[in-house]
Length: 79
Image 1 (cartoon, rainbow, N blue to C red):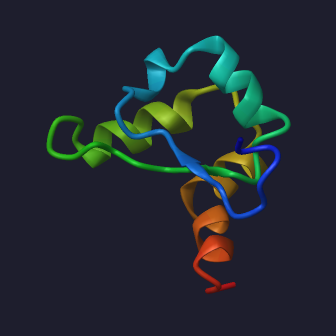
Image 2: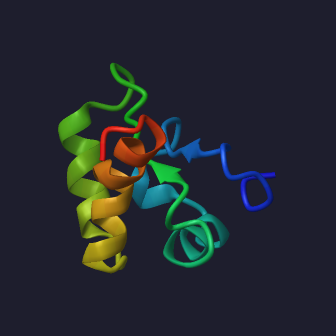
Image 3: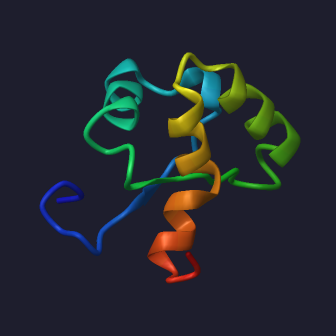
């Protein structure tokens, strides 16, 4: 659904970043890198922890920038 519809995005809240499934990480690093949004599921997952763990993942820096904000800016027409 996310790949086929330009107005559909997804967020990664609900997962502790270091436990994201490999398949999902592969999609975030590849075909869905422009559709993934950062989320923390606060207060269950403190935002500092979520940011730190997402930064520690083996994703390209450009992909992290998209997930942390560029994708949300585009979705909300702020960019």
